[in-house]
Image (cartoon, helix red, strand yellow):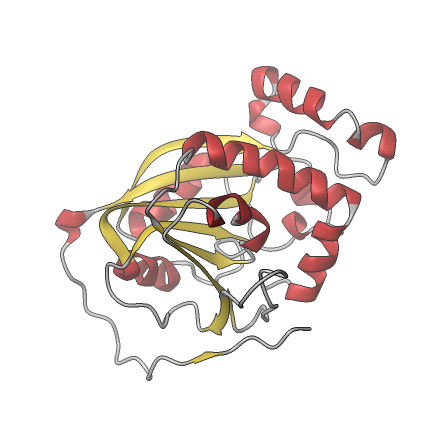
Length: 237
């Protein structure tokens, strides 16, 4: 079940959401420290995590699934988001160097068609990063946050799903050890929770992050006849 884009916007505008964004971006940037000259695509509700790449990348785009809805982004410039069926993206073959998937993989039922479509648009030698709720984490048990929706994954399960989508996992990380509560005292100590959790309690992180590369040797694959690809311009909401 997809979380509505407006609900996601409200979450990331909250104190808890801002902390979650900061902790996840830290892990993303550890894996992707430099986006200079790259074409970067965000899929799902990835816009809170694309900002750091805008000053570096050659191009940054965001596709929000039709069932999720779409919001204008960024606030300070021309829109870089579009609404599309996640299995039929309005993007040329092999045109994206990096693909960041957030609030999408756990909601897609099944995820394989979406992942095969991301394989199509990714450049040879490109990288994909998928962020999902951790099935053993506390965040997956609280439906009042977006990480409590959809299907949670373990690192092994997510790696198998990526292989099914013709990607080869290269490494994984975790984030979100701070409890998902709206307490200023707890949120102010989020960095300490993160440091302790990474060292001693990685199994119980709120999210799992897996980076993978494109399996070039997988060759082409045949899908059912697809409808004409369509997308919609974003109207500010």
